[in-house]
Image (cartoon, rainbow, N blue to C red):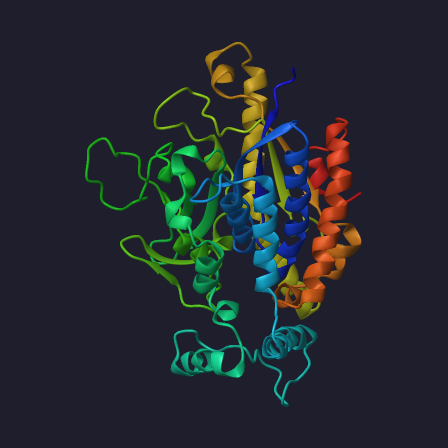
Length: 400
């Protein structure tokens, strides 16, 4: 009998473009349910990708009244995004206002006679707080504009998850603002499979000598909210004793190298180390031409920011693969197995048609369109993977 491959999936952040990932993950979960060809050992995500990764992980997690399953993960993932989009008439109007403002700014269209960013309200300012406080009275659900409320509603039994029985690890990327720590919230810490590391904070014990400008903390809903905190739209997420956080786009999009960390106890090849790493890429690697308009420049800057840190991590995995091949039979090769990296991405015409402003379009029609494409692309991709014909990174990150 062929041993199932261990698969980890990384979900890039990119606002509403992550609806594509909802479709991708839905089809992957169906394949897990219906076949025994692979085992999902890890999920990671940043920003909107963190929301996708969390909901799949939570659906798979054992908790009171549920052992967790692929079907539950599919349901929770899709229900979350159905709740995330504009649902009421007031929310639809607000979405048209906010998305329309970003769109007008991209097109350099004067709004009310002024061609400036009209959504430049400071989330720390009194005007912003008055505006946010007035939204429920206008018929806008609190969870629509408050990410913490939405996460609590979507994961009511988060604190009751049976960590020791959880087979899938999840990594959530965020950026600590004050000290500049690259931060990962890791369910492996909750499970005590991984050790917590508070970066360059003062150490309490001599054994805690490894300190870096990055840190690994337990998984919390506050950590997921931190991963999705755009500083122009939301105050920095304050996690007591651990810092203040912005979107993970500024550090890792998504985290992947932590999948290869040694365990606290046990073998040199911990259970979460994947045979394959699948990246759902929603920020295209390439651009059709040199950006020249303000719209294209802003769009490309955001895409590059979302890809560069990821590519560095993936390229290092490729380097370790090459070193293991060079030193085959030696200790290094025994300690580092080959990891195949693959890419799942949108069709080129779709990627080319999207822009920075569309990342803020929370309309149901737009979500349904991207989710549908994610399912279609992934059905074809999985068929190729099962036949041994799926591509590999770095070639498959590019469009033909």
